[in-house]
Image 1 (cartoon, one colour):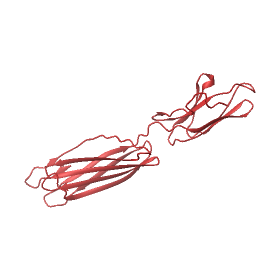
Image 2: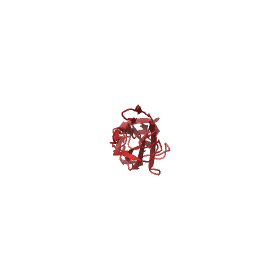
Image 3: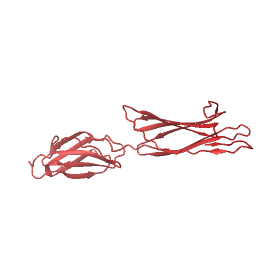
Image 4: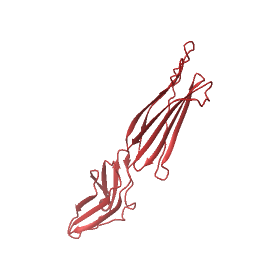
Length: 211
């Protein structure tokens, strides 16, 4: 921010850098960040950013205010700017907010340039994993896709040494063959894979779901 200082006074410009991280969950979906800085002992900038997790997106409201008076504690509001944005999973958005007053000989201004990113971590694990023999020598694995931006799925075959089969995103079914008409049961687990790593395996136990 900048305090102009008038025709005969020296101006003051102050820059404040910051990095903040907030954890939001569906149990605790809201959070906020606030920052203040003062220039020339009379102009004060106030930044408030509110976050609200709604579904898989974060609704972000940015409020930037400029106060100017005889000291840095003045509540004389000279300018304010609002920004409203929605940030989806793994998305980053730039924010540029600006405010200034228009008083004679007092060109005070405040600005805020920053980015807001949603880092979701690994995707949620799939649910309702089932393994059923659909015909002689064929097993069908099905599950419910609980993730949105997964990069793929993996099936682990625990009855054959933990071999892993990789599948494309949005997959909810896989059919494989077993040797012989009465081959041994195959116990499986399924997990989602994302840019931030894999989810947990479903089911948790390696020999819970077998077909």
